[in-house]
Amino acid sequence: MSVRTSIQNMKHSVPHLTLFYDGFCPLCVAEMTKLRKLDQHQRLLLVDVQQQNALDPYPQISKQAALTRLHALNQHQTVITGLDVTHAAWSLVGRGWLTAPLRWPVIRWVADVVYLGFARHRYTISRLLTGKARCEQCELKQ
Image 1 (tube, rainbow, N blue to C red):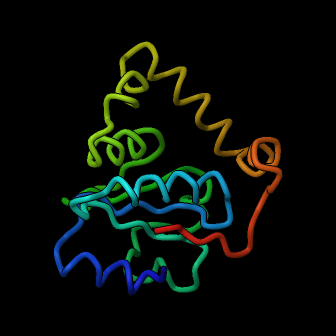
Image 2 (tube, rainbow, N blue to C red):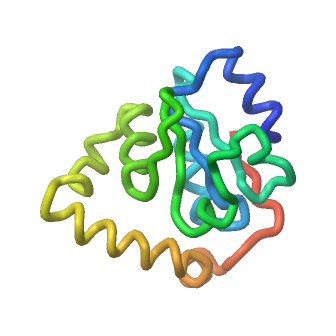
């Protein structure tokens, strides 16, 4: 689905969270597919940063930064990153209880360090878990 289609599907409302993900990463795409299925109230706008011109409407988001660490804009247009994005997205689809422990004070620090390692090595981890390191055109499944 293109960025334009995703935006049209938002029915001209401001999304609660605009999430920027790596569309070449099979694990990232799988997570976005799950989020999209659970997003019954269309609170999320999912933007594949690998798509040409996808970031044009978002000058505050750099492609390189978004590929290094998960980025999102909340409905106030504030940039959030990393596991804060993960928790915000899963909370908006009613599953925040799954990610809430990752934001608890002592666990948060460890989780953030582990997340950065995961993000840095996501293609290798994907190859180990799915047999596919990268895909040129992973598509979100409806």
